[in-house]
Length: 100
Image (cartoon, rainbow, N blue to C red; front, side):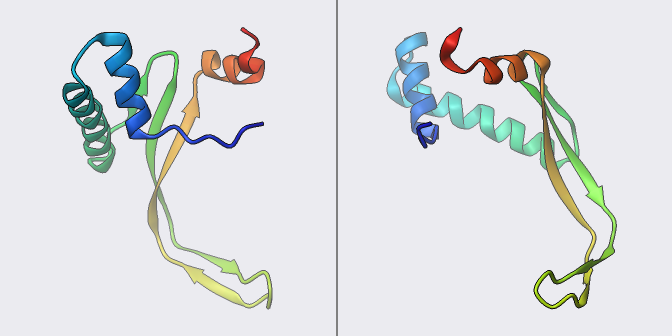
């Protein structure tokens, strides 16, 4: 499997080719969408993109963990984490790969 990474520039280029906006407008559109998604998540909102998946922010409570090397107990502070749950359509598409 290839180890290619999809970047903002790749997204902007795809918008440029497929939508017909200028390269600058395409880059601004991608930045705007990503900023809206980021702001919603930072505010604790759920972001659901149909046929793609759902992004959630979860609050994790403090707990006691273990250092795997020493076995020593270590406190883990409470924190907010981002989670992604892919849609069934996305799961099926990834499972198929490039076959269909």
